[in-house]
Structures are given as structure tokens and as C-alpha cells.
Image (cartoon, rainbow, N blue to C red; front, top):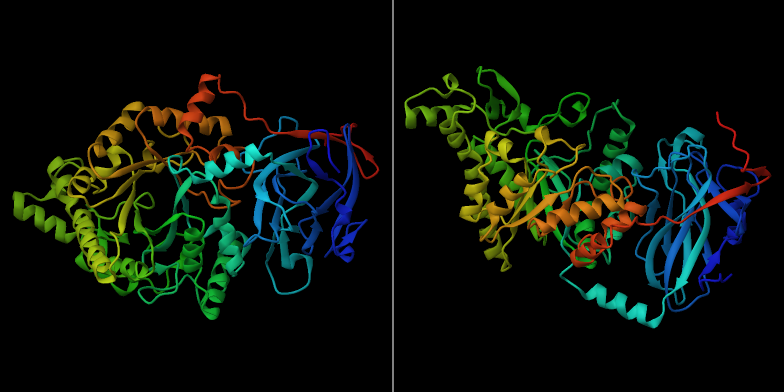
Length: 578
């Protein structure tokens, strides 16, 4: 049914097939269809609850040519409600929801919100619809599955005129806007959904297609744990663990057992999917992940922390610390062997994630002995911020980067390929040197190709607004100025409005920052959720357009919404709080 704006609206979702998958009353295993009304139109809502486990359904579109696809979703008052959509020509489903940043000023409101999905040629295409469900057990009882609420009100298919199509095609050829870098911890989608399939991995990559993102930083491991099928370390299968602190930890371990048993490598799937849509792929590694505190003990059995107690970090008081130290050459050799194994795959680079669980060096015997030999003093008797000691302590991680660079260069020569880039996700100015990270030395020696400062806030704070201090930004901009090292500042907090993302990007561009990094961009649980903020975020590489938006007064990025007046037999104009 075409509307006055020329768009085709599919509002009667009772037309989905097969009919056997639909019911006019709530039932497990089928979709609930309910009539609804707004002031402007009527339709049939497609809904499923947390224990419904509704099956996949489809609906014919019977259109040709390029269209922009929107979907009308009806979330609850907290913004909860997700749906997965797939055109017959798509490689996988795409997960859409309102996003964690969603907010409604009316806690008792009943509104349909319009989400932009994508621009696509609909010729010969059919649309499949799926509820997002996580298997939590093996029986057929309601508790054996946990689903996300799904309420779909309509599908809007807006035809794209020839000029609009040409503009879109021209946009997709641009490279000057592709200045955004995404991070995925390769953990969240398994923790949340427990799906050991190639499609589940591709679902995490698909949102970046035709956006301003040019790189994906996908985690390949932590400590001696591998997030790929290899031989250098151990898999996160947690074999023998019967009781997990969190349900998601069990789902994660069980999923990895399936990956192992089926010999399906999610790292390889992610790498191939990223390259297919034009993203460079950087294998990212948590160097401090050898030993975890409660409630994450299930990750510890079999760790190098137990088999090599001689590599444990030592504190200023002489007591052993619960971590492995990079002051020891054997630690560095082990980590480099793991990264070399990862780099046997056609990755574009590796990244060391120093922003999780620092420090990696302390008052370890090789460092203490070396300092005493060089200076004739015991560093344990000096102030914690003694510049000589901090400079000496940083030599361990500088040695690590030199050894890593040499090993990767050797592998690249052996493979006849280009330089394998090294990135480093680092701390703020003060905390870097205090934790043994000599960024100036690394940049000067060409040991890192991209620096990614996580935040300027102390304590690796992920909640506060990052980069409000222009002096902090200037320090990093000047650090790489005139070198071959790129800079990408991480944007925090994770979830902001589209307008806040736009203003932050404009501010950083004006201060000389060329690239932006987004930690935890992962799919629906991160930033790539297709809510209002994602529609702003995915275009943040358009620097000139953002500047023009600011000059126009930074108008709000409009979220189309329509109040529901009636659902089923209930008149929603009567608000009943409580």
C-alpha cells in the first residue's frame, strides 16, 4: 500500500508465511498477530515474547528497483525489543533494536518508532523475519529458551529516485570518509546468544557494510587463551567446569566447545566477512589475560600462571602479584608465538590492548636487578614516581614491541606480503608511562603504526565523557605529528545520542584528530544496533557534512515515532500507570 510520500507500507503483517506460524492469541512457538490503530493508519502487529521462540517467517515484497528500508518497531517503555531481518539476497540476518541509548520521556507511552535499515535493490527479493532467541537448556520447557521481545508494526519501502541512487553509489565509492575503526571483543555475541554458527559471526560484521568504518579490531585472544582454533594456547571451553557464576559464561564455553568439535573457526569467519565488505582486519589481543579474579575463575584452570609460577609479577613489597610479567623474556616469547600463529591468517594487523587490566610490569627481578646494576640503587627504596625507575621499567614493553616488530617483519618476508601493522590501545598520558608504556619511544622507533588512546579519564574509565580536555587531545596529536604513526581516539561513553556523537566528532576533527575508534561496537549489544544513535554514528566519517550540520545549529537528528491509539481491544489513550 503506497502512502502519500510514495513509500510502500506493509502494515498487515498477518500476511507473513507460513500461516501456521501465526496465531490470533499468544502461543509458544508461533507469532501473535494483533490489530492496532494510530491516528493515521491501521495495521496488524507481529509480536513474540521472552519465551515464545517464534519461528522464522517471510513476506513477499513484489517490488523492483532501489528502495530505502525502514521498519516500525513497538518497544516496551524501557526500549527493549529486537528483531532480525534478512532479504533473500543477504548473506545473513541483521539484528535491529532501539539501542541501549534509547529513552522515552513518557514511561507509560505507547509509540511505534521507525528504524532505518538500509538502501537496497529489491528486485526479486523476499523478506525473512526472525525472533532473537538464546537456547539456555536442552528441554522443550519455557525456561529452556530466552528470547528478546519482538513487536513489528510495519515495513516501509521508500523508492529512491535515479538521482538519489547515483548519489548513494558515489558515496559508496568514497574513501575520504572511511575514518572510523570498530572493536569487537569476540565474546559478547556468544555470551548473549550462545549460537555456534557461521551466520552468528557474520551477523556481527554485517552492520558495517556501506558505512564510514574502514577497520575492524576483532579480538583473537587474552593471555594464553585463544579466540581462534590454534595450537599456541588453550581454548575458552572451560572443560570440566560444572557451575558458572553467570549464565552467559556457560553459553560462551558451550559455544566454544561446539566450535572446537565442529572445527568451525569464528576468527576465520569474521576475517573473511570483514574483507568481503571492505574492512581491514586487525587481530586484537589482551596481554593481561592470564589470570582472572572472581567471579571469572572458570577461565583460570590450565593457565600459564600455574604452569610457570616463575613468570609471575612481583610487587614493591616483594610479594607475588596475581598476573604474569612481561619483564621475563619467556612471557614475551610466548605471546609473540601466539600472535605469529594468528598472523598466519591474512590479517592486516595485530593490536595490543593495554587498556584492560594493567600493569604488565612491576618490581620484577629482571628489572630490579638491571636498575641496580645501572644506577647502584634499589628501586624499591625510591619513590613510586621516580623518573629513572619508570624509564627503566618501560624497557620491558619496549623490548616486547621490538621483538614483535622483528617477528612480524620476518613473517611478512616469508609470506611475500606487505607490512603487518601493529596498533596499541593505550591509557591516558600520565598512566601510560606509569604502567611501562613508552609511547614516545615506540613512535620514534616505528614500533607502532596506530596509537589508540582509550580515554583521557583516569583509571581507564569507560563511563565518563572522554576528551573534554583539549590539552589531553593536543598531547596525542603532537606525539604522532610528522611520523608515520596514525592516531585514532576512542569515543566514550559507549552510548550517546546521535547529536552528542556528532558534536564530539566535530570537536576532535577540529583539534587535528583524523580517525575515531569505537570500543565495543559489537552488534546489538554494542553500538551497531540500528537505533537513532547508530544512524548518526555510522556516518561520522563525513567530516565536512558534520561541520555543515554544526553551522546550521546542530539540529536534532529526528526519530520518527507514531503514538498507538489501540492495540487489540484496548484503547491506549487511557493511561493506567502502575
